[in-house]
Image (cartoon, rainbow, N blue to C red; front, top):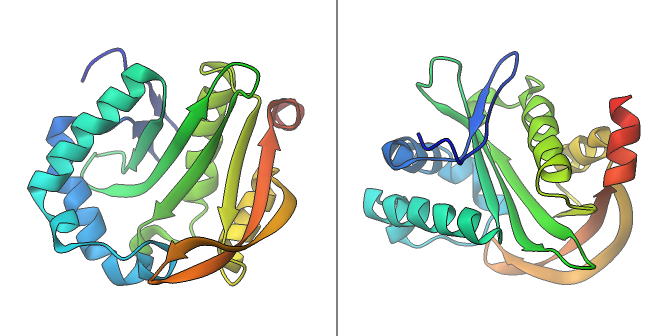
Amino acid sequence: MSSKFPQFVTKHLIIRVATASDAEMLREYYVSNQAHLAPWEPIRSEAYYTLRWWRLRINQIHSEFDEASAVSFIAMTPDKSAIVAVANFSNIIQGVFKSCYLGYSISKTYEGQGLMIEFLQSCLGFMFENVGLNRVMANYIPVNERSGALLQRLGFEREGYARKYLRIAGSWQDHVLTALLKEDWLAQQR
């Protein structure tokens, strides 16, 4: 793996940017979790579940990293045999804004084990300390109580409510708008 990409090892996870050799594991992650993730994601085309699509997507992930427009992480089991979760920090804007959006998912197999907190804490640390962001925004569908609880545990604060915000699972869905500021994240680390 290229040394330009960050990698973290936590108590239960290896966290890094996906490489070309991860394409099949990413494809398998989304194929095996298709029903699990369907209520929270846009409707996906058949192409989305192909190896070719994931090879192209990994190339795009690397380009976005090089352009500093997005950082996409995967969390893997310690033996690197499976992807546990993914996190995408997208629409990074520097300048006077220094903010981005966070989207994430976890495999049904690993849900409820505290791994998302471990994963996202490491990723947020990188984004605040290395990318220099001031704000990370994450939005969730109100009925997704697990996602809301996760964000609250991470220190995200509710900032608003957007009606018909994103087209998810085939229909426009309202979202709760939340954000975490660097200063609040740093205060939690003390």
